[in-house]
Length: 315
Image (cartoon, rainbow, N blue to C red; front, top):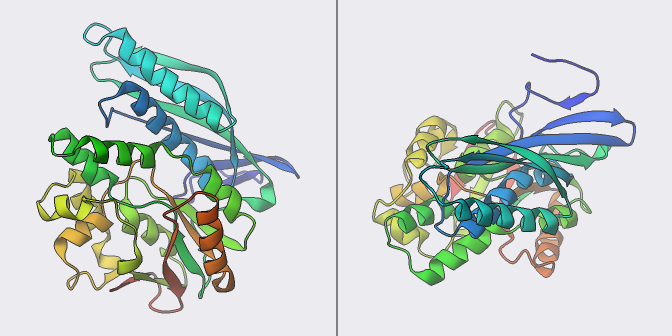
């Protein structure tokens, strides 16, 4: 495993990105992410993929600086206009983040994939990681969950236009405003909610730590119709993998409705931030986030002394 005095976050930690210190005042954050289209509109797909890739930079407390396109494209079976619109969507989102597109790489593939490699910057003493929460800290979630379920419904032609627009807006929204406001407070840990689902990423925050977590499930913001589709069994396959992998660290699993558990483990695309903040500042930060346009920001739980390494699901 690579070890270096300036490697602040590396392979030893299951974190959102790598962090390397350049000098006493500057460190770089490096990450990449790409995937297949999850919405039909190419421009929207580009926006979502770019926002998703840059989210890891925000989760580490940094700002995106440069980005490079990652493209796999079936040039013989798909119209080039699809790629052009996707790249336009990605570029517009990169510009919105205040970053620069500096290049990229493309290969011919049987399946279209797009994403970014992103480099960001952060002060070495202001790096946020997914570990470090303290007993008594409040947990805040900044976006509603359910994107994986809604996207599965979209693929099955079960979602109307209004719902498609809503989930597209959620996924394409940058986490920059949430990060900018949060770092003004006493933050002890931060991560973003993506493929492991809300509970999967929450488990990472307490795994092998001397703390546990109590989550008030009724306070978790949900995308409209997510529960309806979950009750119908319309969930992505990753939900079951997430649940099987992490169910052992949950107290209250058996008494929680299976469909709701599916929502809690639903793999998210470009989900919100999970922020651990000092108890005295929890309500103030929640209100500040909402005033900055992070309208779904919600206190969903509290870190506790016991049971260590476990999440208590409380209704």
